[in-house]
Image 1 (cartoon, rainbow, N blue to C red):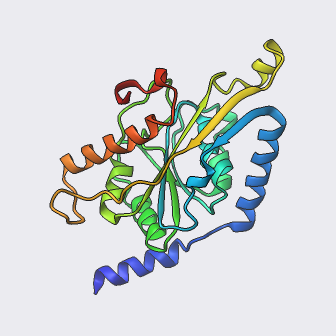
Image 2 (cartoon, helix red, strand yellow):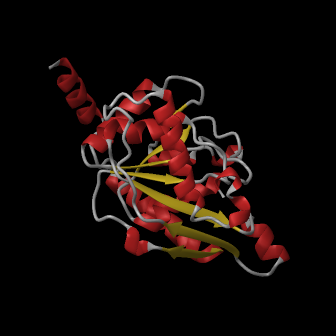
Length: 233
């Protein structure tokens, strides 16, 4: 009974969807800038489920990779993002705050963010997360535990998206030096899962989380050029 009440309280605190007008404006702005400044291709839209619950996962080679799920899906997304954002320019670190993301700090328990994420998915919501945790140069890294833990605990389908820019998102440098727009492609894979713990329960072991994390990254890797797949090639 206490657990049910606890879940209900978090669903009231994090109703899905939230901030629809604000996020629609931001999505429109992202779409306009992508059209204006980028040669942005999207493949695999036929793989998009019509409704949730759904966990959207993607790679994170650049801080701008986060626009991939927003620009390609049109879902009322909730986002989990790194509160520190070490690879993002200081002047742009305010952007997740505009979307009102669920922010986490790497290396800490992040109980509130995890409970919020569970509340979103429990309401048949759609949650996006970068399993690697923060932006880094290619190739792909191993997943941190968060995405795999959520996938196992809640047993929701998972949608992989691979986003890659052969110009490393160097928007203005490409325009200036190559006299063309920077090329970006997002490939939407087929949903997979739900994943489950070896014992069939919702308390995954460390081995369950590692196995699920590897499966998630392998599905993302299949959507990226071979040269950036790393250990998942």
